[in-house]
Length: 291
Ligand SMILES: [Zn+2]
Image (tube, rainbow, N blue to C red; front, top):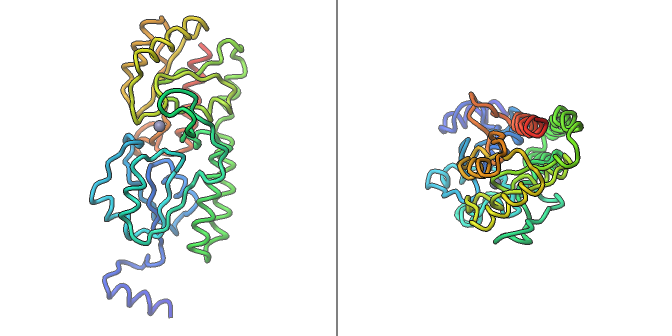
């Protein structure tokens, strides 16, 4: 019966024999990679924003809408990450949407125009990322119950790898004295990670939707770095490093390099997967602070 159906579908132009592969569309590459790890061969996963793209204020194209309209589900972060999403989603008919951060205990942004709003970057905490993985598993299992056992097994082993990804950085940071445990960055994208690693946080602007620090904010960061004797500042892959480099020059601190948070790199780049993103970012932080 199944064979006959597949032949019929093939005749109708529905493509090759993968007629039972479902399609998930995600808003950015990190969620896409998580979804691929959970869905395995049973789900085709497409990210709307490309590797390296700015994700907060993205402008969807007509092609993005076409690509998302035939999806079985659309997975998005929520927590005010995708400022463009609601308008985009309204143009998709009948595609169910799943907020993958549902159930995460949000950390609020504590300054600037987003004061009191949730910080959206919860995937940078392995504990919160486990919630994302469970939500993806549940969404896939509901839409594709035949393969639910496989999604559950994939999710468990993947969560184990996520937990293990921070171990080298934790080890390296354990030798950094209390006074040196500061994470200074361009975007305030590291509240969850800083909490998990026991670091204090300082940044030039709260989220990349407005990727530049006000003169007052720049001055505050410089003053705090001087007062606390902070010796390193980092910047993120999806924004210009120039503001962070200027602060480094003015304070005599080192520029600690590029952190990956909002986007994976292309396949041949340094962080083609979410596990790579966690490892590379936390190891860059640890080696910057240990110097
Ligand atoms: Zn961001």
